[in-house]
Length: 538
Image (cartoon, rainbow, N blue to C red; front, side):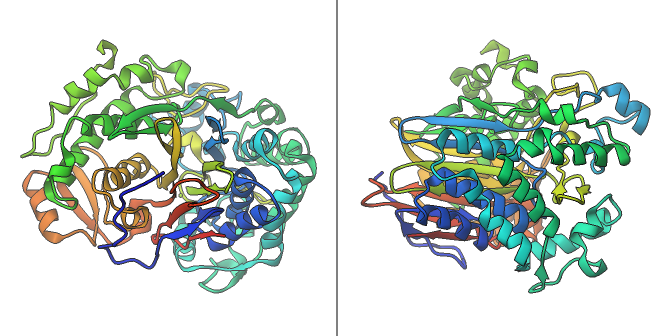
């Protein structure tokens, strides 16, 4: 795919773009190397992505684990496919269950603990991807992760910071200290962390192709662990789970097409925001100017207003994604933007109209955009000790009030993790993602605007300072942003808070852009300096 990128990088960075024909980009170097091992063995991009994802459950447990959910979008060489690996609520979860246990005034399931964990979907997603598209035996893909868990690895800087920060809140939760607080504290930078329980879990998953997790020994251990800690998960809850192959939803922008997983995820927010920005000549404003940033912020706020009102599991929504993405409707939303002042937008009426991300691509043209998450850091904080299953807290994304996202048995909650994929005229261009809660669609939009409107190369677009919309008029902004721009945005009514902790508030991305024929030109790859990651290839 020919490009007019400017390969000068105007931003301070510890990274440079990587050019290769077989590539993996992750937020931990050992995981990138795990993916490359599969490509060296003759595997494809799917094999590489699964191996990297398995390794990430060990290398970055502050963000994901064996009890995570996952999503992916992949180009298989002929067409684009998506898979939704978000888990569902146990059969015993009803509003009445939570109100009786956690109080009549509770608005959501709890943030932490066993009652925040839905059925994990990541392992089933690995298996489904391998069965449909992998080349190597499934057990081979987990070998690097098992080795890392058994032998251990030295803790890197960013992971250690988040590990230590999470300890005060999570240290007393079931299984957490036993698994993640060796020596009675969080590991220090450079200390060896070993996870033998997770190695046992990975071996059993490898030997049974995941069946032990959803109906065998691991499922039984998880159900017993839940029961012992006041939960209602059963073996049947695990056995009834299957990931769902889905058709990605899409929106055209500047001659390209952005593809996202449909709801229950929030990827549609990026499509809405870009559909609104498509009404403006964004390139007429300088790339880091207050005018450019203001337009993007207001478009994102309009998108979230609708997403938070309408998005849930698809069959529960009162409007369709097509209605939310209708061009005339988005044009009417765009007309609400005032260039001189920030606004607190409300939802429109379209009826009238802690996460890890990784990506891999091979020289035969297969590209995989993969995301996996425990949601908030270590997730629920609950860790089944026999097999090292760190459970996510996706149940906290449900509502206990009437509406599209109200909790119900077997239902999937509103989800924040979203892989993304870019095409042009039906051909693959880029697999990418930006992890970090509601920062994800904001990161998709901000980095794409830089690449498509301003021709910044993927690494520069990744390194550029970001902002993050929270609610109302509240915006967080990275400390690298020009103070004059921050002041100008404040003058328009944006309530700007400058944040030094880029990991916590501004996400981290991985990007693979196809430069042409993969066997000849290959790919250009970027990895976000906000984490400990690595873009690697051969």
